[in-house]
Image (cartoon, rainbow, N blue to C red):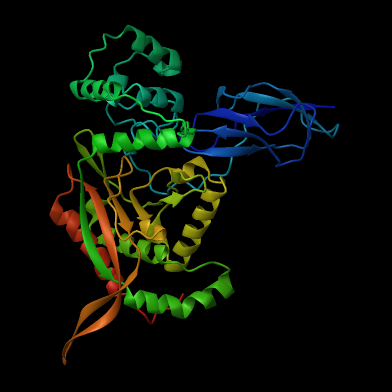
Length: 430
């Protein structure tokens, strides 16, 4: 029987390697085509890798914990048919969203989105860093400017893991005063445990979330503006159409896509919200890619992205939100679906919270939290006079980077979102 090499698949343009978490099959196990064989982690997402052929798992070439580059062999599969293709190292590719039609100079994620095919020809100090190198840099608090000054021994001068480790061992480490103060305080604080206390190790995703939250707070000057929006018209409209929409489409009609639609409209009115910072340059993004924060069953958080949201109608937004949320909770997202966001929406109202102060997803400059919708007494103005009535109210919390967004823009933007929600056309159909 012929054999074929199974290789590490390309899981997105920005993903150049993956860490093997676990093998789902053992040597000698039969494998169907498209059946999951192993689980792989990237710095974006954990995903199961299916087999491209039916056969028997003959040999495992990479162990759990190994970091394997895309295209490198990880297993040998003995094919079931004699007429099968010969042994090859042809890499497979998981499906990825189509590339944006408009070519852009992508300097939005200098340390998160560069790939060999996507290096910036005209962006200064651009350089490819593998997920492994980036993780080491985050853990050791090596800044982008510092990384760019490290000589690389890899292909085309790329930085390898060993280059970074050699640099760490040889550099004259003079601790930052703030870091030193924090570290000394942490070390001076004794850990007090009782017999009933439980020590829980952070899982891999929680470590990544912790690192990125601290990183964001250290990069962006966070400030938050709040606006209360009257959602009464939207609540009435949704109650009218949600059952019919469920029956015809099989999908739930939630408030999140409706709010995202208003956010997209407000971004069109205030395009300087849809920016990113690269050094002392401001990059104004042409497409509106909305990240949607999703809470996972594990308690962790993930932010898949709706690409080109400005091109989608409300029904398409409903489908996109539901699809991404479902696949996020079933660990079925692709790495590219977590990349490229330009603005993020987080529904804290789903936890019963009325407002929050969300942390910006780097390299974006703004994020909006939407609170729970509550019935409240409110003053209603009419030509005949004012009176008190019951209205459905919701707080919008807009955190933005005060380095590049001042209160007039940050506050004006969230007010514009509320205006679009309050002027919702109750006669529209979906």
